[in-house]
Image (cartoon, rainbow, N blue to C red):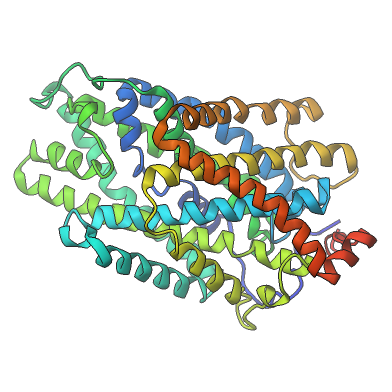
Length: 470
């Protein structure tokens, strides 16, 4: 059994320092949430009351099951590559490849969202930044800076995530206090507190997107200190932190009387200005600027943390023969897979011009399909390897594993229905279907051109590295 000293994966510098609990919580929070930014469309589509309900219900059906699954599998198999390693070990190389491909395809669209959000907030203080080629250059610049930080190692990313989380949440602490105090004197534009037309399906899709990404933190398990203890704690604390920093600001602002119909992407800036202006124009303007800066920090921190996650999957795939060996090259001093980081960043750069709505739908559908495979791996490993050391177990035995696996399915059905019923989302659904079909094709292409992969498949030797450490 793997002890808590956790010998490093192949190629990882033995002396490299690893992230502990607090930085892992910071990384997880940035991967999943990055603050309340991104909830604006939820309020617009659903109204305050429904938005709060969705923000409370979604983690129960979506986040809580995923964190339980991630806690068990990360503690049992703390290898870099995370979800890819779980699915491959549980169901074989074909499904392992599909898991990695779906996650990578989702990352292409997911990672294009954050430069879009960064520019959206930047344009609040610099309107010209949203125009034409300048916005593209800014997006490319953001990618380059985040890649540079990631190339320095996991610990700077972890420490930076903690600092950025505190910085981006600070303005919301002020908004919460002022909005609660202003409840007795609603904003003059207040109406019934509900949007003109409620779109619950659109609201559910936004809530799902804001609560997804818990499994991304699994891919860095080889660089986490005492992962069998640290992961369950980090997941439990992070899910409470995310839910609290979503629900409390929205519930507080509902007392200010600002109409939900007026919300749109970036409206937290206007909310801060309106709430603060009740105590003086300077405070209102200062709070608006602070929230704008926080929005930029949020988009930056999420992009920065997700580079850390997505760049670790190619390492495991390169070791298995699915990718060229060059994708597994690490820096000698800090163990960073610098080739994978750079190659992935180039791919993300090509999607900067896609619209936010299309990105959201494609990302949610592809991520949801990869998540279903991860839950299948949870159940399959309980059946195939009952003797596998599991420092943390999903409560309720096999029945508990099956029960939590069913939780996300209704939300996935809603997302699929929304994509079918909304004409603007049809292209997103088509992109997702093409991505799924391409994953099947690429597996057989890889099998044909990689002798090392065929040898692994014939010998069934994929998990020798893992079992050597158990």
